[in-house]
Amino acid sequence: MGFRDSDAIGIIVSITGHEAKSHILRPDGRPATLATGFIADITDRVRSWAPQRPPTIGITLDNYPAGIRVVIKAKHPASGAQLAITDVDGRRVRLFVTNLCGQPQRLDRAYSRRGRCEQRIKNLKDLGLAKLPHYGAGMNQAWILSVMLAHT
Image (tube, rainbow, N blue to C red; front, side, top):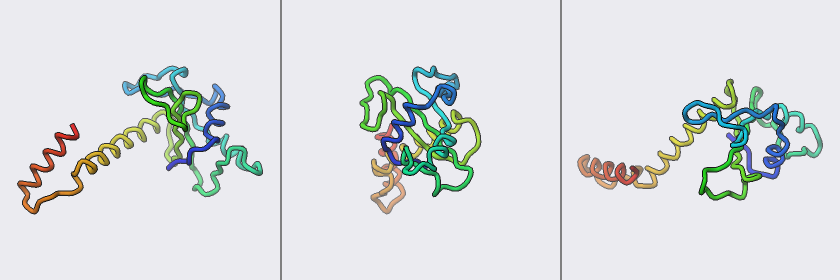
């Protein structure tokens, strides 16, 4: 679950202090430098801004269950990647909401892995795995093999 993109995300990224920032974990488990990007649990900041009328950042946690956490990740995109309109200060920003315990770095890795899995499933369905064209098992098996080859 996440929040809609808004100017609030840019504000949060810009004013998050060094004491709240943590290193992003690389795929090998080593921490990256803060210059490359950071991850931070900003739940307390969002809750402290919410009582202001109108809310400074336009985000409240009123409709979310108790125990919810808001985590933000900001990192520079890979070289050659095109920046999106929602990127802030040259950083790709992702904000997610969770009710799981643990360090923000570990939660980010878990969510990222799940996102890659979901993307692969979507790609396979788009390639035709969701629509088996034949009644016979042998022809459908050939269809599945061709879809898997195309995906690879």
